[in-house]
Image 1 (spheres, chains in turn purple, green):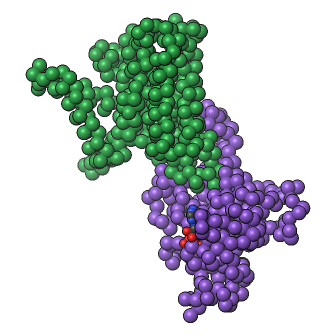
Image 2 (spheres, chains in turn purple, yellow):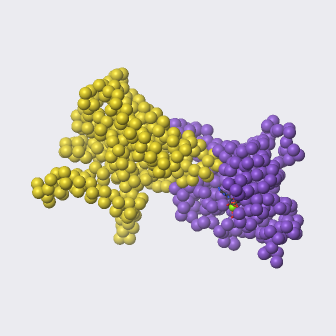
Image 3 (tube, chains in turn red, blue):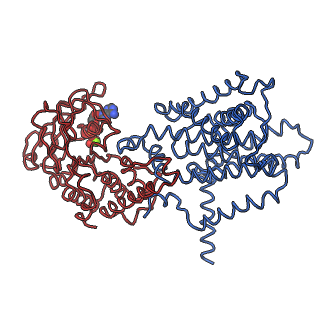
Length: 288
Length: 344
Ligand SMILES: Nc1ncnc2c1ncn2[C@@H]1O[C@H](COP(=O)(O)OP(=O)(O)OP(=O)(O)O)[C@@H](O)[C@H]1O
Ligand SMILES: [Mg+2]
């Protein structure tokens, strides 16, 4: 199925729920309707380590925003702050027009955010189809008893989830693997399944923590294609953490560079590439 | 492509047919053909322990929450059924449902620590259930209708003009309950809730960020598992032993049920039945064998001890050889058979 066909299967109301009156009028300039994410002065400590130092970042709807930096720079920590797994010591996170001191992680999908993990975080005991379907659980209206009783409406819901799983799987080229236990898939495909699980939730903001790590060149090209297609057909905003500079420069609209927890540069790929601080801290090897 | 019907082990029609044949044999042939000994000493305990294993498997195998308190929930079920029957004189099915509900409620309370504790620490906290329930049932005579010995006879089992007090009646009652509950558990684990259970077991963090209700799923698992184990307790006391006493529901029993779940194969339904069959039949076989070889020459206590050692050794050897249990072994065997027949 083409990207456009996939797009048509998703109701507009789900993709673009109105930004309700929840706007905080005291928010700074970042509080514009097309803001997908705002981070303001985020500080995060682990004991004596300052993992994030006064990091601010904004992300517009439909934008692919790379976050790069050397190992231990704080990239994953940033994603964990956005997804509520870490509670920042200072600063706030603006999501869906609302400001949070700490994002409630169990309500993340309702806030329109889905993520993948740097190390695979699939459910090895489930099939590919079930893993993807798990991303839709938060929308289910029928609970345990309705399913035990076999209520027709509950069955219908299950069928519609199956359809949606089929669509996403087709979109990512996973259709022939749906019934396999996910743990038996090669690593590259498992990365795709994780992306599928995130997409089935129909998020507006997608957080990808090193989606290409460990992939072969072919798989990387495929994943790059998927990320681009996702943005183009679904209009998702994407935070992309990636070490492969080629991929980053190719895919992203803007790039933020972290080093030792501080944001040392932020701009278009071309700007960042020229930045002397970035060259010193990170790109040095590649630029030389 | 169905997410719900096609699970880890899709139910192929051949399997459904096999199960139907098995059920027909169990319901129709066995009551006529099985000797009293087979029903009393093998089938009745097998059914009760299978059900307990199934209940624990839901919690430990599917949801990944270790429990050492199974026998406590069996006791709660048995004593609740006894008291609902004694004090309210309700029809048998209502008594059973209330007993299961009581066990679920107690299970829910002792499941609360699972919201904070994991693995070994959770296992230790479920021991609290084991000791607390046994203590309460012994301490407060009211539960045993103030019987001086604490041992009470199970009530007569009758419903809608049918009496289940005969040996065959008790067997059929047990079998019906086990069949019904197994069907419901099958539907549960193959439906969306099964996905939630395994997701919580496999990766709690990612389950949480994709919006799976982790806390609710854990509590459901504790409640349902305890309800099923509670029913198993009723079967154990009412249809097998015909007496209700706290002593039979001790820590040994909890471990026995844990062994059943593990040996049979965690996160499989048939595992509970395979494990229970082994745990019930193996000691009987050993007793026969030792009776045959050492008839009278060795003290009965020593034989009992040797039996336990052998059983323990077998369990350990088995876990090393096949950590996925009898169910996985059966899978391999059928696959091998199929390929043999396919070739010839
Ligand atoms: N849960 C944690 N507990 C303690 N320290 C942590 C934790 N998570 C991250 N850190 C520390 O915070 C710093 C930033 O780590 P982080 O994982 O965010 O880096 P990263 O940029 O994602 O690195 P990589 O490229 O290796 O994935 C490191 O010093 C790390 O040791
Ligand atoms: Mg990282």
